[in-house]
Image 1 (cartoon, rainbow, N blue to C red):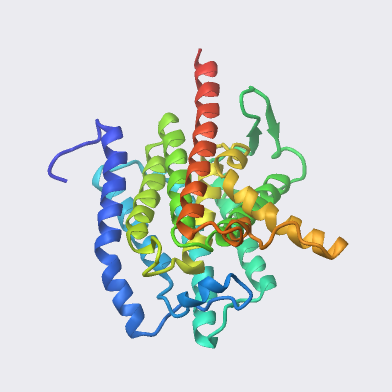
Image 2 (image 1 turned 90 degrees about the vertical axis):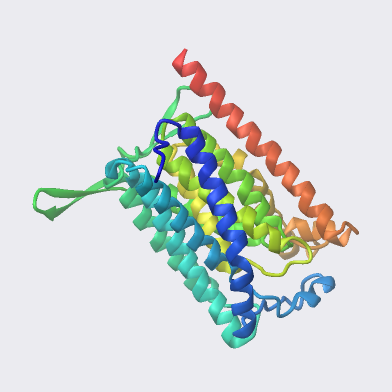
Amino acid sequence: MLVRISQYPTFQVFLAVVIALVASAALMPLWIRLLKVRSIGQQVRADGPQGHLVKQGTPTMGGVLILFVVVVTFTVMALGEGLAAERLRPALCALLATLACGALGFVDDFAKVAHERSLGLKPRAKLLGQGVISVVFGLLAVNWAGVQTWLKIPLTTVKIELGRALVSEVPLGGGLTLVVPWLYLGFVAFMMIAMSNAVNLTDGLDGLAAGTVTVVTIAFAGIAFRQNSLESALLGAAIAGACIGFLWYNSHPADIFMGDTGSLGLGAAIAALAVITKTELLLVIIGGIYVVETLSVILQVASFKMTGKRIFRMAPIHHHFEMLGWSETKVMVRFWIVTGIMAGLGFALYFAQSVRLKG
């Protein structure tokens, strides 16, 4: 780069947002045109809100371009400032998990388009793929990136160590040993699978998933920046910027959807950011909107199976508010506001804890 900005890390993070935003917004029209030429359109659920049937055929797989922009932006910022390779490892682990889940989502999207139906991969196959990706991510994070295996309880100094019990050591030769902390790996796998699918459930209204992901990843970028982990902050910033650029075309009525490529990949990114910043338990607060969306589905299914009655008019819960007469835009904006409140609260809790520890 013509001007070294390594001494201005705050500027670097904002620059990552701007680069990703501009690139995403500039390239999206070309991507939409290509998808239309290829007749790659969304298959809408027949049992969903009837007002959504008009969205049938709207270009999908916008997540492909989102992830492409994230990779390019992160690479440009990391290489441009000569960031240390060892320090890049946690962020690279998170990026690889994001791309792997995005690739799984791409297969799912492709199956939907090829078979012209709203269901792609079988749930069991999707869960298996997510499980494998999560375990590989956990192993890389612990053994290659040096991520610790404890969980910190917010606003306390208490750490729950998950990496000491049920640990296996696998010799790899050449003096290398693979440490397998089974409890922590199980926790990471559960968290990544849950968050990946939660964002996928949230991606049911124009702009809803992209907007909430923007807010959540900005919060994690702030946490990473507070930890002096510029690499992780740049990754969070790149994701947020790419989603903002995408929102220009995904706002109601949407010109393009992110598809499972985007929702599964971005959900994995959020979980991975929580792992590499050691804020796994705070994810429940920062990503609280996804917890609510998932719980609404679980409660709906459980209630119907046990009593034959539904708690909500339709699940996930954003459809419930649609059925109450709220417009898509009203649901979207109010969910954004709730996400902002939850993400702000989570960041405030982390900040208060970090100040207390430094004090």
